[in-house]
Image 1 (cartoon, rainbow, N blue to C red):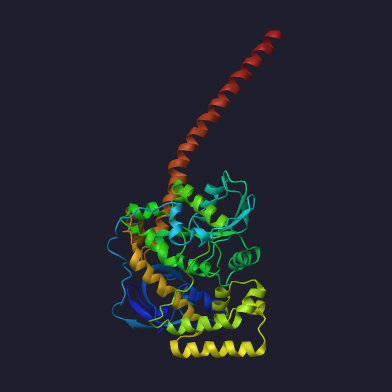
Image 2 (cartoon, rainbow, N blue to C red):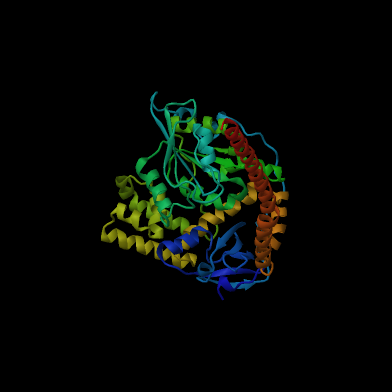
Length: 458
């Protein structure tokens, strides 16, 4: 059966993922990977789209897309994705913490006066434009819907004229599925900013970290901004920031962009990593002792094969290797491999597919999500549902229910018409009539007075 046929509340394991080219890659980047377990949360009032839970986060798919994913029903999921039950409270140090990642002897700052360029990168609807406004003091439009950022926006960080930060369109991955993803990826590859600021929605961390892992492969100094931390802590959640830093190998700063909390600390870290060009310490996220061993060997074999080509093309070699394995046409074109190297690449990838039991793109995506799940299990206490969300869901059950949505819609429209024409409209009509009568009375008295004056003169 396909995912489209799965009933609400039921779970299944994904067997195969359909689609071709960029569309299939988009499915995989969203977590729809063979072997992943999914649960149908609910359907829209008219039955389309459907909301799913996969890898510990919620995802919405159209039924036409869900129909391309074959599944096998299961009684119960093997992983709850609950995260840690509690974390030990530790204070998050300031800039001195870089010492545990970087040797002071290696510090060689950029010349004074060098323009520090930044790319602000993150998923859609994660507060990216809000953070951009806080950093630059600009008044950009902020909305709570995907796609609010459609063009580049540039500005200097407040109080630091030697900086230039670019707010890129919101994207979910560095795979070229949409025009926004192509724009953002080309900017990072071609413009080569001094550093990246990766903003992550802390309330939906599993989904957001997929892009983070791809950005780490770019080998550009980076700081991760955990946004909406006030919502996490306010609903009894927690994140071990120091533990996450150790696993990712880059500074991780908890912030609340809307409340301007933690932004000053983020700026200090961003200036530091750009000035000293402190690159990520970790790019290899394979579990060498698990089923990712085949993927690990494949990536490193491809790195040795294409290293000189990647350097000549100006592409980070780890990023180029994973994209070459996935068969990314834009990266392969830039690498310009000869026929023998292309055949060798294909041979290495096919060997990995046989050992791993997944196709090339699915194996790379599964490697990333597997690491994300292990990271969240160690460092994240998931927040409880907020009272606002519980209240909203209760209202939604009625207003968007399968059998109650249409009657509620008709009832609301009838109420609007009744209030418009019988209550508010009638009240306004009476006020308007009183006004007209008053004006008519004044005009009538004035007219009579004029006529009286005219007779007296005559």
